[in-house]
Image 1 (cartoon, rainbow, N blue to C red):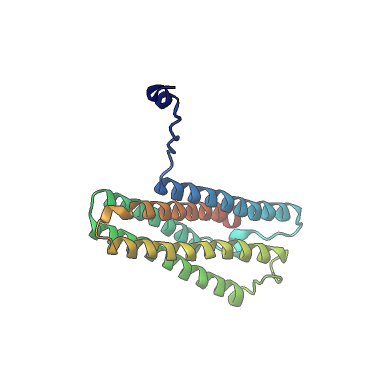
Image 2 (tube, helix red, strand yellow):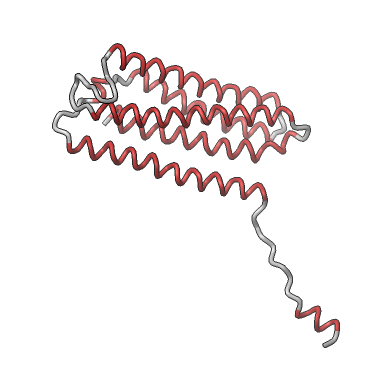
Length: 206
């Protein structure tokens, strides 16, 4: 076989469309998909227990919604500032990126502070506990603290990731290189915000 014919029959290695950046985004989507199942299971369990209970308290009367409505608004605003932070990277504006990231982080920290205040009020002021509930079914307190606590852990993780993205972006000489990291962190943060809207609806409004 001639060299030309051999070259024609040589199989070229297939190029993969995945890059290190796309692998990172794919990994984040896989993680969020699994995490969504965890929250879905918790909320489904809450719905089942509530449906089967004969003395489930009215959440809006027991918990109140004014403070939590503000917390929800705060997280929605933090999603907006996260979007603006990513936009700032595209525009090459490092100062705006830092400012919007700091606002996003501040939103998460304030949310956690208000949640700690709410828990303290419910435990010590309203005598609501994991297995004690003077207003009705004791499982109400169990499910409330489990679901809101699980979400609070996610917000804490999000604040840590946001801080990491902020520091990483500030240190890079080629500022646009931090876009993929910030985008993946942003996906996580938007997920946390979306889940809270569901938690707020199920636990406080319905």
